[in-house]
Image 1 (cartoon, rainbow, N blue to C red):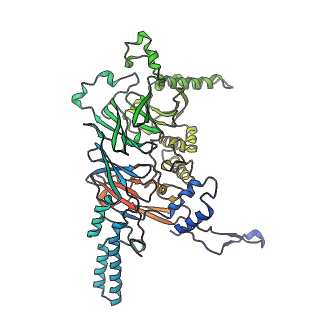
Image 2 (image 1 turned 90 degrees about the vertical axis):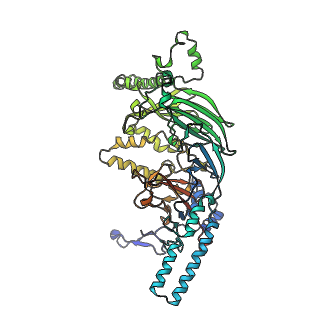
Image 3 (image 1 turned 45 degrees about the horizontal axis):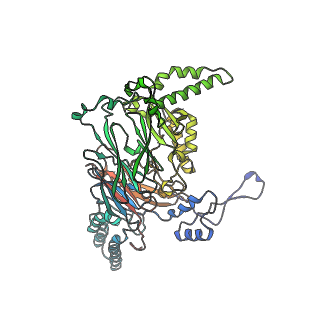
Length: 622
């Protein structure tokens, strides 16, 4: 690919109809210097904030000159599951191989591997000298081929003509490459704590983790299936605690859950809350949401939202939303003597949350029918027509928009209990709920263009993305024109696809809601305003991505479109999963030029690749 370069002479465009008028000149814009010294001098002279509204971009623009430039594949790691960095970047969290404990590692810094590579750099320099000497002596082709083979055995594949290797492959069989892969993990990480968390019989969900605002505590979840021999001991009214409880099935087995609060500063388990005979979606934090110090946990089985405050290393239960909405509703209800002996499952009337939903929908239909200029009874008739379907809706997902507002996603029981094969294509409702006032503010269908416009305009609010917090800032259609272009391209693709259309595109976009807590990486290398990359392979959302035939992800500077760096994600022939799905999960450090990619091998082993920055002038001289 040819990239534009600065030229002194402008390109002259002649207008044939100008009649000898002065020709128009078109200058190719001059590229900004990519040298880190020039950038630092410019920041020192001109200041950090040249234009209003560009503070975040100018703060991060230095990362365009400092980035990962080296990959070590198949690093030898301890028997654990690598999870993620803490938001401050000081620690790395992993789950033990038995998924009973949490391992907290201290991160030594992005340049920790320089000393390890010094010896290999010396060998590289020695080989260069030998090659030069061989050339001067005029060795034959056979001797020169032997030296080339020795150079290859050292593991320096100078593919891009930079004068030094950009990766150490698992195919490098020399002793030094093997030694680097063996020592790489302990070079960057030092074990600080190994904390026993899960109780006997339960296993931690390694895709579930939330960090508090002060980075001192971590919230994780563990679960265990209810064994068949103990299933008959589960009371009927423990399975059905209210008249909104759903029916379990083979795809939707009930479990016992424990939510743990772990002090990662002192390495102790601070508090635990248990949920027996329940269903909570722990994977990717779908069933839990943490906003500041308020934690919301959604019980799918019992259609209840539990609200806790996380403070002083404890879970403080505030309220439950579902059967009742106010804290004192149950007290008032118990004063009615004729209902004292009635089981919640056998109650005939609607629970409080469902009642507020139906009331809001009815009032909206009634207002549109009687307070409009023309008497239009269609919406009110539609409410009566679909009343039974509305009453049977169940909460599927939820998120905290702020400390006072919830976004709830309702769908049919078949979707909620995983009976439906394509849940995102089914009809559902999005409900905005105010917690203090116990009021439903708005209801949208998953075909609503209005909700799509809200999501595109206020994506940061749905993500809880804050410009003032580096640990929680990521590109979105609300703050980046490049992210907005990618989003619009996705929307146009679905609209123009076969069996697609505007309605299908709306459903696909709204299927992202509600958004799981802390699911986006804050790494500047994933900032669309700084770097251009294939978002189908690497994404700010922390999910495994498909790896194509070429396991290399390339990054280009956004302002210049000049090639910056690439990430080697392993070798597919030896790293593909048994199912044939080639998935790679990237974990970026929130601020340093360091990343980890994890790939599942054919033998169900997880291969870890480290992407780091090496200084070629100090470690591997040119």
